[in-house]
Image (cartoon, rainbow, N blue to C red):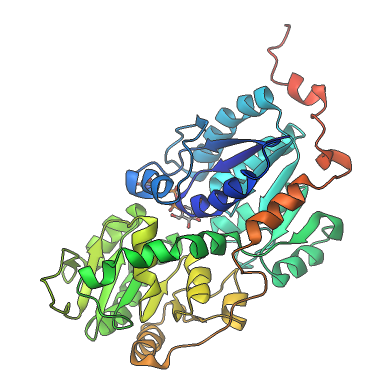
Length: 394
Ligand code: UD1
């Protein structure tokens, strides 16, 4: 059995790492790791391979940045010959980034069985590129591995047969459980002069929040109120760097090392993107996390840290109904009030959703290895599909 795993962007790495690790117990399975190169900066990619102990990719497609069409097309063009050559029993894609959709399309066109981890999530907001990627990937996948019951319900409502859906839990939490002790042991908050629960962590990179200066300006009003009371640590995603500098540059401080034994004063502290362990260690001791990320809504729920999500809707509603997440949209008053409440120790408390237990990867492997019928039976794809890559006339 051969499984081809796809990663491309930062939030993919911590989902695939536990699956590859669980597959080490199955020497009969050959895993191939394909990195599309959607993310390529050291801080967005290699730093995660190092922290998560991921093997070097077998294939690096080096596609880089571009418009959605350019990026998707470049990934498909580079991925197709690898599929044709390797003929895996499964292509496994995770999450909702452009690499997920591009490789799902290539696999479906070549009749290669496709498994999607983190299937079924819906924000019901089609202005988000990720929502398009989720809908399209799920409609193509043979095996839909979901993190929670709400995702199953979404898929059933869309008419997906129950036999294709398996609720396996949240694989990102496997990575969190495994690496939390090492992340804590780094002692980064203390080294930065940050007392436990007395600071906020901020991330912002959604196009809807950072590409429109008016909206970013509104968010900035709320952030200033929080930063007047406590240190706010903001590792800035590369795509948001210019917009953040334009709107918040004047008041932003740089996150240098703290003076020994001195508490860091309130303020907005910007930094480059942080590696996985360092960021996890910082999040685990934060008083509140302010974010528009999807994964961070889940990680804060698992850590029991209050999360204030700067979005109108979430594709991860279980983090709101069960976890520590509160949606505040981009209203500065709501943002500041929720963050300051949490920093005062009155943040939202929550519970761990079912199956977010650090054992999702073995359940995924179990499903991949289970005997199946039809296209996902693990048989090589029909030759006609691969013949389409043969030059005409040969
Ligand atoms: C992508 C995902 C998003 C995810 C995010 C996590 C899509 C549609 N979006 O968004 O769902 O939350 O990753 O980080 O797939 N850039 C760099 N260096 C890099 C990568 C990107 O400088 O290593 C800059 C480039 O200017 C690039 C821009 O970021 O044009 C956007 O990158 P892209 O991969 O298109 O999407 P993200 O915004 O990173």
